[in-house]
Length: 328
Image (cartoon, rainbow, N blue to C red; front, top):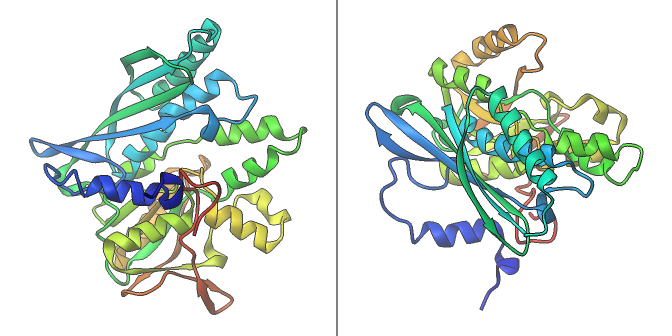
């Protein structure tokens, strides 16, 4: 009998998806699930954070609290929805210091306030090991919900802000002088809710996903749902500026295949891409919310990375739970 460590998170999700086969207006496999709510969708997502896989040693509880809320709101953003609220289920050993619990709550509250929502409640339970489950709730127009599928050949591929920050931050954890900065970068993602609202309102964004597990893996998942191919031009990928000091191989590993950036990758109708980029860059000038065209959607086929006029495979690898390291 196969174990989860043999098949990985993606296969685990596929096994469950085959069981949960009803009541899904948009289908399963997207960043969020939805419930019909008049002319809108009630948008729901959940994510679990546990110290072993998500929290570097030495992280403060308030950093963990921010992260718990932020990663859930990032999924709401990927659906092009407006956030409404957040609840959490906290599993804690009885020996947990109350200061830790207060710090965790303060971090959750700080992130919720930043994005104009409230922590509505949740649950606390005794457990042998810490684990934190968050659930975010949002609202989106039924005709403007953003899914992982919906792209068409010729659509432009765009990405928000820059890529590779989290990969570099993870590498910094091995350097005692840079470790604190690395932890802060990893545990302080900034959900792109404002950009997502622009995506949804524009009516020209055809699909979207947050880059939680790496650009290569995100585009592989979008390709699996759309049946199309995605070509990225390496020279157009918006690199986190400190990556420029590294070798090209290290740059690619961090920007394409490392998880944790929580930016958005989306596809846009080709005739509207330049206008959307210009509008967003003007609206968010100086706020690090730039949008960049990084490639194009094609017909069915493998995803590719264009480097100096040559096409290389864009690998579908990145972070995957239940496996010991990055997987292809």
